[in-house]
Amino acid sequence: MRVVVDLNRCQAYAQCCYAAPSSFALHGPEVLIYDPAPPPERRREIERAVQACPVRAIRFEAEPDAPGQPGEARHG
Amino acid sequence: MAEALRAVVVGASLAGLRGAEALRREGHRGPITLVGDEPHRPYDRPPLSKRVLSGEARPEAIDLPGQAGLDLTWRLGAAAVGLDLPARAVALATGERLPFDRLLIATGTRARPWPNPAEAALSGVFTLRNRDDAAALRAALAAKPARVLIIGAGFIGCEAAAACRSIGLSVTLVDPTPTPLASVLGTRIGRVVAEMLRREGVDYRPETRVEALEGDAAGRVRAARLAGGGRLDAPVVVVALGALRNTEWLAGSGVAADAGGVACDGLCRVLDRAGRPVDGVAAAGDVARFPHPLFPDGPVAFEHWGHAVEQAQHAARTLVGPPEDHGAYAAMPAFWSSQFDLNIKSVGLTNGADAVAVTQGSLAERRFVAVYGRAGRTVAAVSFDSARWLPAYAARIAAGDAFPPILGATDQGRVAPMDPGFPQRPARG
Ligand SMILES: Cc1cc2nc3c(=O)[nH]c(=O)nc-3n(C[C@H](O)[C@H](O)[C@H](O)COP(=O)(O)OP(=O)(O)OC[C@H]3O[C@@H](n4cnc5c(N)ncnc54)[C@H](O)[C@@H]3O)c2cc1C
Ligand code: SF4
Image (tube, chains in turn orange, red):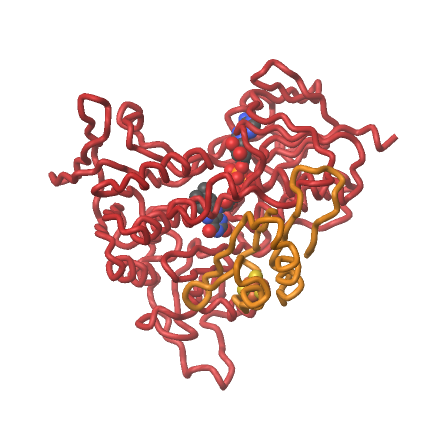
């Protein structure tokens, strides 16, 4: 999977870290670090993080190379 | 009829991909060809100077999401070498010509090389712009060099220094200015960064200029000679001297493009030499120079991630048109940088600021908001681990609010404006 966080938008609310602790973490008070390429079995977690983010900063794609696959979430 | 229109996007990175995506969203049905001189699919650059250098993210693991379902045609590893406006075609280095009805120029910037080409070519000397640059530098760092010399204390230089320290390497960071990030934040705030770098063990040397790099017989860099006589052993050198805009391929095309970028109007339409918009040709991202309603001094170009995303979307809307249906591009400039565990964020533009005031927190605690003023107006705000305040300042900047800002009764007392201490010759870090 591919994940990118809009770090201008991110306010370090850390909800993603609770929803998907193996993919998101805070370093210090507000540096969000994340796994840009989590394995497919974490998909449910990542989807939960996307939904949990109050500023919709997280974007992910399940199958970057399969044209026509939906598997995308977020917008804004 | 509309579905037969062909779109070409030159530059397959952040602005190119987000532009292609927005073309589809705005209703472009015809083919979209993405041309990129790098062999890679679009990937995210900010990790290159952070987690890729420290080894926490693999260079091949940072592809950008948002590529699926767009039905794109790729021309990767193929540089555009010319634009033929009368024929409405882009020429590639491969000899291929791509005809277009709609063209998005998103060729971004490249690292400014070390000025002496022979020294720049020594092995062990790196720049940091692309995935391949970062992979090569990462490999050199993984070999545990005795010291890493970083030339240039802008954002990329500071972030690279932090990444090197985080894996226990000895780092020397040199820059001719009095503090890190001096041209963007001013020396008053830059001093806070200098203190942090030193506390984290970076051998930071302000007002220090590297005059020459010395190689050994095998063509490996070995040391740096400093202006004024010093010498530093340096088996690995990172040249972080800012960026150059990739506009050479447009030479002779009739488009107004030079080292300052590709000239656009407020709708992102590319201008010809006479200053008229060229029909169906737009530009976005690091390469574009355009008038921004917030900045009266003339056209600006931003090298910020969020800008590449937003301007590409605006440009796509212009290309699908009609362009006049949406207003001029006026997104608030914003960027972030992370160094060690410090999060720096900024909104607005500090260019030309004549005063700075700490409005929340304190410099001593390294946790604050600094607001910049210019001729009595609030023009920028920078936060150190205090990002939640920034949206409110963005609104004040957009509204042209007075400086020093008038704070609510619950905020700490009065703010004391200081000289921001920008170095004489403004240069982007
Ligand atoms: C190491 C690093 C760290 C960064 N960190 C941050 C950060 O923390 N926060 C932030 O806000 N911003 C950051 N940025 C800036 C951000 O990444 C850029 O603003 C963004 O990448 C700009 O996107 P772009 O698509 O306009 O240009 P680019 O990403 O430069 O892409 C342009 C693409 O066009 C290609 N190209 C050039 N010429 C041609 C040609 N003739 N034919 C075909 N292809 C061509 C280039 O090779 C490149 O792939 C960072 C940048 C770097 C390099
Ligand atoms: S939930 Fe959203 S705002 Fe909060 S840390 Fe994660 S990405 Fe940032």
